[in-house]
Length: 254
Image 1 (tube, rainbow, N blue to C red):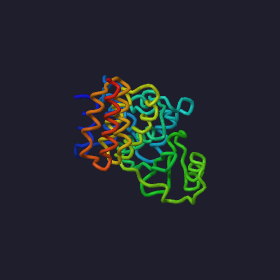
Image 2: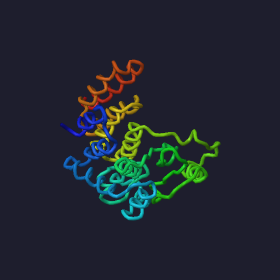
Image 3: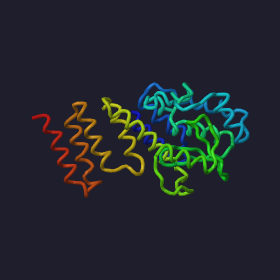
Image 4: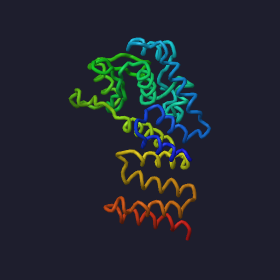
């Protein structure tokens, strides 16, 4: 089973967890990835943690997890096993570590999809964690400051900009980060990222078209055209656009 189908098997199974799904994404970049090893590492990080304070101390003081601001676009920042090995990552992947260690330790945490900067919240409180910022604790005013710094927007700030993120939305955000990185000269990697993204809710016609383009950049013109044509029934409102794109791909063989 290839990485895309393994990912599909995880996220369509009842009771799947965020850590195994994030590792299934990472397996797209590293087929030799030993999932069990990294699940055990998450278990180890959770040992002896019994409170919210102990959780943040374990991850951001003892283990030293931090944001990789110097090489933000390094794809390793989006691969969970690499984040666990290097103790470096993006807001979203560092938050996954926080969420999954918290789950093991019985500390209820939830992801917060604030525009521009992903956070983690201690459930039932107004305590927010900026995992990218080395576990800095934020109140509502601190969240607003992060929001304005990361987006530059001056719209009214409030709880409506701090929604709880679903597990599929978290995975989609990881894949979107990889999509942005792999667009520049890595079409084979972009292909598996887009195929995984299309498995999750919220994907659209742009992902479908970009998948065809990524396949075409690898010289798989006929396969790419067939891929687009196979989706016409699922996207009838875009039938003409898909047909034209498929025809353009086949034209490369003339």
